[in-house]
Length: 308
Image 1 (cartoon, rainbow, N blue to C red):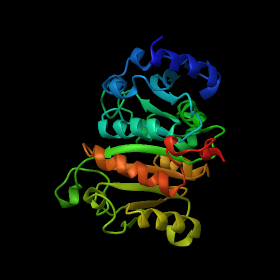
Image 2: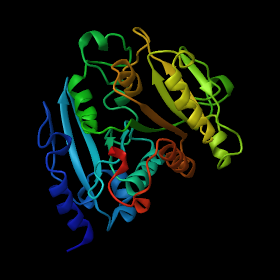
Image 3: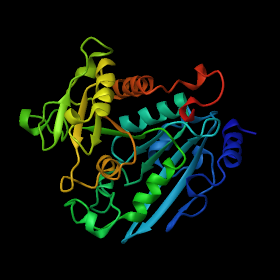
């Protein structure tokens, strides 16, 4: 039996019922399969790295408000409870590569939204599609329709996990204010945003680039939140740039970060890196894991410390 097929069968045993089982309120999810069966350009691009590993693939579909969403999910069969990553944008290849690195190194899983290789799906940005009600959706100019089913389907993958909500993104070089074209930067001010530069001289030079950063969010200013300040300080000490957003009753954009903060769902970290900066984003993953105390699978002496 091919090792990847064996991994798929093992995944089916270990993860029976995970991610909502076969159905979760308007969504359906497949059994674990060999990643080679995935109808995903991203997954297929990484089959060389996935072949022979204990990783299985699931396809999840969510129908809501005229949208037919498809999620591509990779899960580590031997360490399914490890960190779980959300990749909302289908045109961010370095982010997907960093997610595969994280999966193979630390276990857990990842969920990638399929938009046919584009940033948006039928005019809807997948990362502006998190809302629990019509009233909440009205706060967000970028959400076309309320999406409680989509929101539940994504966040259900964190059910039973004590670790943070994790996301991976890529962005453009610089920003419009300095001649670039990106939408997020350590040098770009914005309502409710504060920038916290990482310690110089730690890691590869790319960590100091304005486009490579950790995005966090909370319901208070970071200056008024001692716990958040400690988290930011630890990230900065590891050489990681940080942007903090204060999410308020009216300052809410239906992004995953804002939704997690608004609803008090725990810690959230989004690793932003410039398009193509795969090596830097992989290093950011490793440094974040070290900061929050998650060890690589090969260094573990027993169970999974992610849930300890």
